[in-house]
Length: 305
Length: 305
Image (tube, rainbow over all chains, first blue to last red; front, side):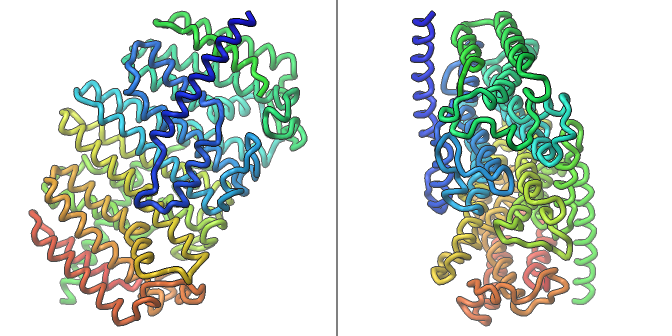
């Protein structure tokens, strides 16, 4: 077991490194743009992280038998969208965070105005980047695949997806007494779940998965997203401050409602396990090799940061 | 002449009203999104304005013989992008404006955080909206037209276009002593010119204009954009505060460098005329009926607000 874990972790590190090289290829260069904005955008994207979303695109794509290069622009675009959301979340007018993963946040280094513009730049450049997938299109089927993937990206990143979750989160901060389980579930499935779903769906769509397969992928992704987020709430109580790069217990100290405060610690741990079991069960109905994906799910659940 | 002016103005009002009905059709509805964000986005988009960019898309499209419905999603998307840029520009961390066109700005009504998210929501929803043009695609030629139009939208709205101009503008505010004529020209051609160019190019591309025609359209648009912006600087000196909805002379009072402070008043007026003459000359090389477009250019130049 220890050996399997070690080999998974090596494999994971290897894939993260490969994704970071891929990101480098797609980062904006200054050219006609002012160098400061390119610097601020790239500072944000290269700040590290799990690279979970591009990894999920790639793994789902391979699971359905896709060829690697077609998804690359979407892998980079997805990480840019995830990054812009963090850059804007950290702003003084939002969560007012000066540090993330132990590193100064974008606005803390480049100022408020540039923090706003770097986020805008990343969101816009994400679409510019994803559209590069059109360069590989020859047939009308290729075009419809890229079109559908773009539609999922835009829909799940926007007000019906991630931004919707951010708005509900901001509203909840102002009125923690109004946060019900249903509302917290909305925040979790949208603020985090929507991009995880989009990642797996985009991989499936680009590889030509059927509608029925896409539905299973969505369900699996929503389970993973929710489990991931509940685990975040659990880590806020028990986690290691150094590994997380933010003070432990900060949600509770802020009087913020979390899955743990609403449902209790034991129930939260149970739910994470139930959701990840469900996700693995769905995976087993899907074609291809999903050994790495199964290990990835266990790892995300058992993670301490 | 008075009669021609009056008939042009009636025509213009009619077209603005038609564009506003079209915008209404494309505005987001709450559905799964929190109602507050949809309210803030729609508050911003329905705040009035010249609707110049969608009008330019439509006029250029018709000039090249296009059918109307194909461009509609892009007309709405372009106005959303223009609007998001104003919403973010007005934020306390940017220009800190509480009023625009005599109406309270989005953040002033909904708060800072919601101002940021409403802007993000509009930028993202603009791409979601523009992609609706795919619904009308049947042939591979249709797909490549929509693809090219999307690429122009993303490129000109981003760091190599409008956002680049916003960044240079913010940098110039901090260091007005460093603002040269070249730098001011960069700000003007990017902050305003890029979306005007994109509007006319998108109209031309969707209607199937040739590469050579697209180049003429770009040049014409850049002339219009620059003339429009210099006229803005002129209006800041001589304009009517009530019509503009902001205090006259505010740029000078802020110690801000403008085309007028750099090149002098008379030279600025001359340049506006030269640029608009150039734009009209280019138009005359293009096919179709451009009588309305020519009047529109004269009107933009002679405007007092």
